[in-house]
Amino acid sequence: MTQNPVTGSTTFLLAGRYRVEEQLGAGRLATVQRAFDERLRRNVLLHMLLPELVDQEQLRQRFLTEIEANAQCPHPTLLEVFDRGELNRRTYMITDYVAGKPLYGQGALSLEEALLYVRQIARAIAARQKAGLPYPPVSSQNILVSEGQAKFVESWLLTPEDASRDLAFYRAPERTEGQAPTPANIVYALGLLLYELLTGTRPLSGGDAQTSGHPRLQLPPISQHRALLHLPSLEKLIAHATARLPEERYANLPAFCEALDALWRELGTETQRLTPLALPQPKANNTPLPMPTPLPPPVASTSWVKKLRLDRFATWAIGLLFLFLLIGGGYLLLSSLAPETLENPVSGSEVLVVNVFRLNLREGPGLSHKVLVEMPSGTRVHKKEGPRYADNVAWVRVQAEMTGNPEGWTSLNLLKPEQ
Image 1: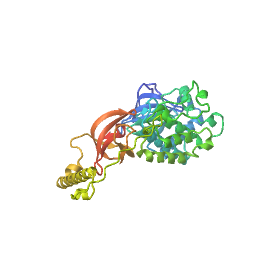
Image 2: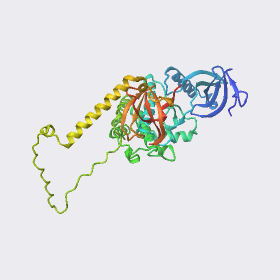
Image 3: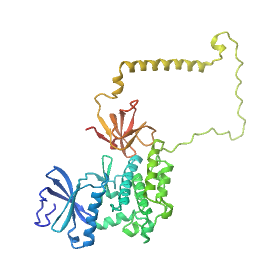
């Protein structure tokens, strides 16, 4: 339980409005507490300056700067500031409540999920950089996710020692060597983050900040951890972002964001390693293969089929063509008689809505299956089967309310119930 900084009470009402209920942890500058806004009837977060920093003016001003940054440069991936104030010389801010779980420890994500979250974080940092404002340090511990949306925060669940070790993993080699910061530093951190989300592992770790952040060798390819995830453009992107020398990386964050967007658009192609076809091998004794038996000469006939020299396969093809024409005509006739039946894919099924900017509909559950169509945000789908689990993701078979009512499999994590 938290305490009133003045009275020592375990629960209290701040500013006559925010009922403080539980302390969640502490970051570099502030404690983080869950509170309830009595006026608007909603959960919020209370961030209050650490008591030992009250007399440290430089750090106090830094906390004020971060409050102003959150207020001046709102972004859906960053905490939104609702209010600010001061209690017993301790500055505080009120932000939206975050109920998601950290990405750290969730294992390997699907390619679509990993790209989705890294793109959100990269664009939030780019917006802060453009405005010349600070942003939270990059770490899977500092990214809370819920229903396809990432929240970029400063982790309040780690001790200062654990936080130092955690952040050292994402430190660029040149920074470990004491060189000045460059725009390529953040590209390196985000490249490592993408690699971690796809593999579920950190390629290097150590017992302290120094060993965690020592210069790295080339990262093993993604396919070494996930044999079915073979995408050369993905491997090239990560290798470029995590190059040992800063001049060999993407020059800045906008360039890295463009590469992420290009890879996102490429997800409509296959991502499974292809197995080469087995070709027939010649005999070891070099015995010549027997010559094929020549076909007998055609026999003259007066029938119209033989005059056109149509063989048995052509006759079958003509029959199939007539069959398809018959089926197609029947389908068009039924469509004209009952259009409402085709427009309503599934009657009485669970209706879900696409909860991301763009979501792929695949032939089967898993990234190894072909993409049938891309569904934009807000597309209504009808659940027909599932969930099934593949690539550490829950997949459901749905029918989308789009042109042609396509049916296929998509990630359940990126759908939400219709309100």
